[in-house]
Image 1 (tube, rainbow, N blue to C red):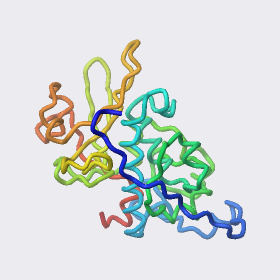
Image 2: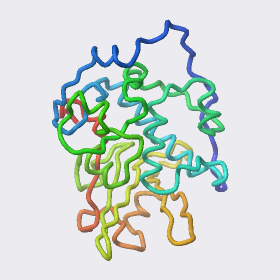
Image 3: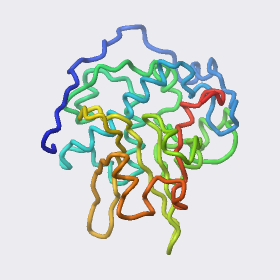
Length: 263
């Protein structure tokens, strides 16, 4: 952990429920809202229509992503090997039920006292872990079982099929939003960063972004965290989140945070 970094969050476990067993996914799916009001491929039952759930998602998602920056590489989940993998990891773990055994499975030393994303305690089972849209088109109920959703999606697929563009101005970003870049040289390359806003770990009033560089040759890459001001002056201009940068695609928001087009 870098010098001066202090973990200030409490070790508070969510309450474990002993409610009756939930209904099977097929029965539960029949009771869900299978419309796709934005026609973006994301069914409305996945959208977080509650402001409390959207806030909970943002808190968990940014905390999980930033926590990986402070984790020693040997203790970081092996799946986090590039920028898209960091997004998938933080998204998936945000939507899990955070029972006491979850932190050990996720290899996390502490657990924040955030409220859960309650909607996914009811509907997450229908998706069976296939959280990411991987085929274009509006949602149809058959998509739940025919490969339209998967556990894996690369940066391009996350950008095209799982997010909405909010703006090309960084000032429009809210914690948990995503910054996407596209570089076109010898081949098309996509890169993503997570806008954290204020840090969960260093109370310095700065705004941050975090990302994984991805591998390059024999170098496996690394987690990086920069202030917004540092990113705006980044040595390689192609990675600066500026409207004037043709490689910067803009600020994007997860589809599930865009209920009915109200955000």
